[in-house]
Length: 315
Ligand SMILES: [Zn+2]
Image 1: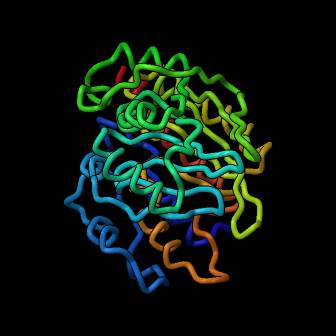
Image 2: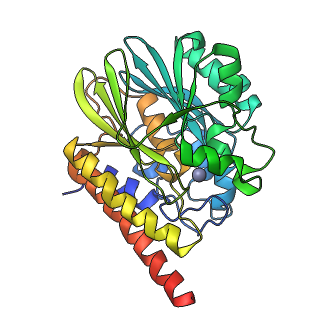
């Protein structure tokens, strides 16, 4: 049995989203179904509005209040895209770095401070994939605070050989990096993040498994790194294989919670608001259970399988 929360998450997930070719979808979250009395205005202004295209949602720079999601995991960003901050016993890991230097100056760095952390404590900047909305502020943060930028060799190469659309000049490219590889554990202090190579959205994108606690209770978070479906058939086939591959890791790790870098794709605008108003004893809307995570992955498989069929017919 999937909870209402998971069903809404699944129906809202923009699995078919490609960064520059976005099929229509609808966010189903609505104020009426949220029992919290404090549904955010940012959410209310977006969800349910048919006039807002997915592309506009991706580019939506409306800031989201920095939010503690788990005891050791925080969201910092905007409606369109954001970063995740992992707090370990030996410093901070920043996952993804939004689009621009302005995002660093106006959102990421102030957000880290607002959450009570020191940006000088960032030990790694982990970039899930080589698109500008995930790496744009990475070099700025590296230059100012010294943390190495971690990227796969394939996406480092991809980023440096593409300069249009999602790799356009409006997104500053990192000029230094350290390779990450499939199956690697990124360990800092008491926390080990599992890095899994999941090509398809980009040639070298990675997905992550992050151990967290929620008021002391252990959970495992899955973060699928590149949400949107690619345009080429062969890349869609890679995407499908990567889902199966990542599922082996998420099953083994008993992943029971889901995050992405794009709040508008998975009801995060609403879920983060719910968390900011969470009262003692309220459930954490990011915990969807192991069945919920499997259903989330299955839904992505259906979307890419349908897209493969469509692309084969068009050949
Ligand atoms: Zn991307």
